[in-house]
Image (cartoon, rainbow, N blue to C red):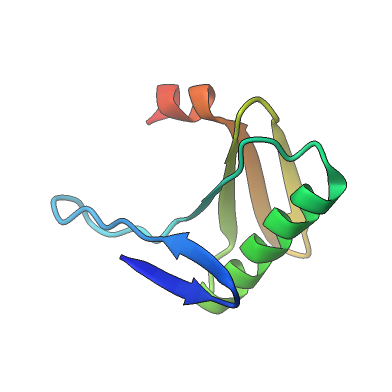
Length: 86
């Protein structure tokens, strides 16, 4: 299911076999450019607020970081690492 969220498109996936634990995930190949990183972080901040979450995940090609913004957390993780953990 796709929904328009302030000029950005976000994909949602729900697994009916497991209890639903809301998770906000965004994917960006490369966030090394400040404009790209700021855009992706801003979108996740808006999503965290809208869905009343405390944490979001940004999947990238190879960047890794943990951002603490107020009391919210945005985890930036490479795709390969996320795949190994799932």
